[in-house]
Length: 109
Image 1: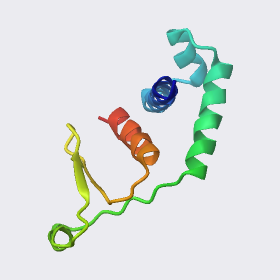
Image 2 (image 1 turned 90 degrees about the horizontal axis):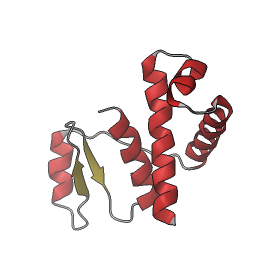
Image 3 (image 1 turned 180 degrees about the vertical axis):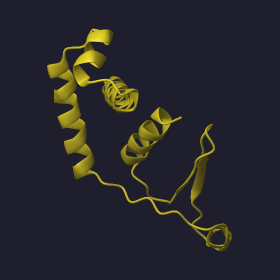
């Protein structure tokens, strides 16, 4: 059940991102895909509210800092995406936040 819910949220994140990058109005975008625009706006609101509640700080570090951090006992995990983006995930990360971040980054590929 959780996987289905996560897939649904990922689907709508992708659709919202696709619409914003398409240059189309919401009405035209939804009409082309057979989606009710009211449903589109409901998901837009739901996603915006969920992201406001679960803000994840992402910090970009220089290669020198990364080398220094790798000598520390609790090493972060590096996640490399196909589009060349690399994420450093510290121990104790929240998996749902990571999934949300990856969904956003995947839609930009």
